[in-house]
Amino acid sequence: METAWLLAGDFNSLLSASEKCGGAPFDASRVREFQDCLLDSALADLGFVGPPFTWFRRGTKERLDRGLGNLMWTTQFPDTTVRPRVKSDHRPLLIRSGPEFPTLGPKPFRFIASWLTHRGFLDMLKAAWAKGSDLKSCSKSFARDAAHWNKHTFGHIMRRKDHLLRRIENLEEQWGGDSELARASSRT
Image: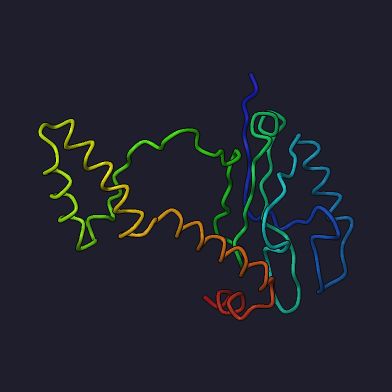
């Protein structure tokens, strides 16, 4: 029985001329070798989201990092996205195997451990707990008050995280391969 699997990383190979900019002349024979290897292995490139090049050196830009999946993978997870990072040579890729679905209905309560670091958390907890008369009502009161406190006092962490991730993606697209950050990170 065949199972879904993927292979991801730095392959040091291109699949087309569009994956290279600058440097030595494009070598079509090496591309054919990699394409033949993928065909023989029944693997497909999963595409990518973000900057078009993942490796940069002295005016040469190439897309070397990628995710590859077999037929079962592409069938079971058609919405897979591969997100290379700026200067991602030998760095992890972010791979999501499905779309981000909007939530239907109210979200279940989740305690966020970083609340404990906020100086106002304990006061909010005590006040919320004092509103109830038994464990169930105290828990409901705390969940309701914590959600409000998280949104208005602590700051909605996931919204801030999403905002920062969008900023990172925008910066990656702007910087491409010629950024000071990319050059600086290649020295580390």
